[in-house]
Picture 1: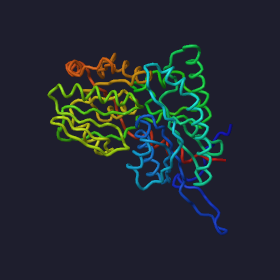
Picture 2: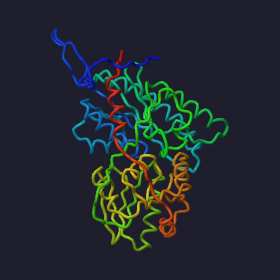
Picture 3: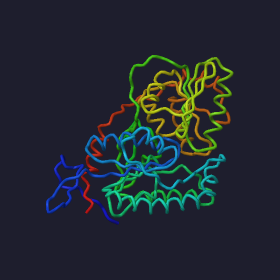
Picture 4: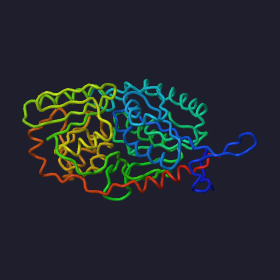
Length: 382
């Protein structure tokens, strides 16, 4: 497998490549393809700090994804080129991750194969110099520098019939095809991902720090509760229905953000406001303007909660998504965030328990990301 070396280019030219034109050498911005998985909105949102940093350092960014993730990034970056990739269309219909993934595996493998072909075409057509894939295994090429972004080196999957063991082995094997694996976390303690990405890592691993689009600031309170929804269907809809049903029986003012970037619907019913989605800045402000946050225990959400220093949080993992279940249990046991399972959701009880939990207390900055992106742009494709 090709391994990239560091370029000897001057740092000022790190985000540029030379081209021969009409007998003279000219510099053009390096073109970076960034491709987040469309599995909820978390993969897309945690790519935003990387996109911002790439642009700050002079690179030209192309975004490729599908579905709601792509729609969100199109709205956040209207001036960037966005391209459609083949969808995975993963659904979480049962509480068993093994079964959810096993019966969909032929569809997933077919999508990865189609994705690989699409990426090679994009590389040729748009002169892509390097790519960053957030959990899209088909977004890889031996011809350019390739990075895999993940917080799951060690999958939390049952070993049923050997499928879990194979999944863990194959996950690590595929990650090692890439020149680097970026982990959105800190290397030491305290950290967010726990055993998901600490312990025995891979030789191509780099920790890039907590990646959040959110920023702590002073805002005026507007809501008692904000519910931020995301994740695969039909569980996202089940979660939404449970929250609305219980909030209608309580006396709190609430904002529900559905995470549906393919819609612009809004509604207001006495104390409960609902919106299809919010852009980065609006969601940042709304979360800070709410006393209590109800949300999935998705990893990107946890990074946002760390950046905002939120304390009163109710985590509800997606049923059957073992990584979210592990993270929710971990933070509950550490008395950081209160956790309930979706089928046991009782907001009245949960709100009563919140004073016992401390919230996250860790430093969040982008210094590490700046250094990693700078090194990445210095990579030599030769």
